[in-house]
Length: 266
Image (cartoon, rainbow, N blue to C red; front, side, top):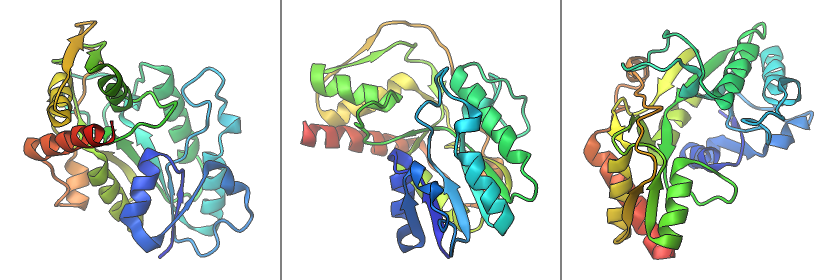
């Protein structure tokens, strides 16, 4: 079975590695090719419009619904990589049927894309709402938590937080996330699936694990305010993939490995 994987970013490349020979990895703009869906049994959208998350983004210019409509016409399964940011904040683990209520522009735009995809007649749609995926990522122009963390740790020997270190979030190593997404892409379950660790890890603890792996550095808290904490409920994920589990020891090992790689390349 051929899986068309759109997007050559951090997570897209990792999913392609997990899929191996089954993957056909293409850049975002490649969907204009008329024959792009030939021989494809499943599509995974890991692409991103350059303006997504900014006021310049327009849903009419985003290519994800365009490819999804073409997939629907051919009866091809379509998996969209979404975000937990579509949910309204909650002190308890977020479930797939919990209230929606994005608190930032990116979340609102991703929810608009979800709604547009869900309205496409006949689309065999799986929507993944993904936790904070982390790994060794130093891509220029990226502003993820880990990208910024690694940049300042390598350059200045510091990790600076603009949030309380006690803020709890759901973190998942990229290799594990990619492996689970690859398996779901081969047999898409349909509907909405949260994809995370199901664990609440304080941001400061994750940062200190990376520093430990790096071998030096310090943690600096610039704004000690707890905000944007979340944990995903992953019952449906585990019903589909019973072994989709991770514990704190594995999270720590993954963070240590990120720090060690940074030290090796610094």
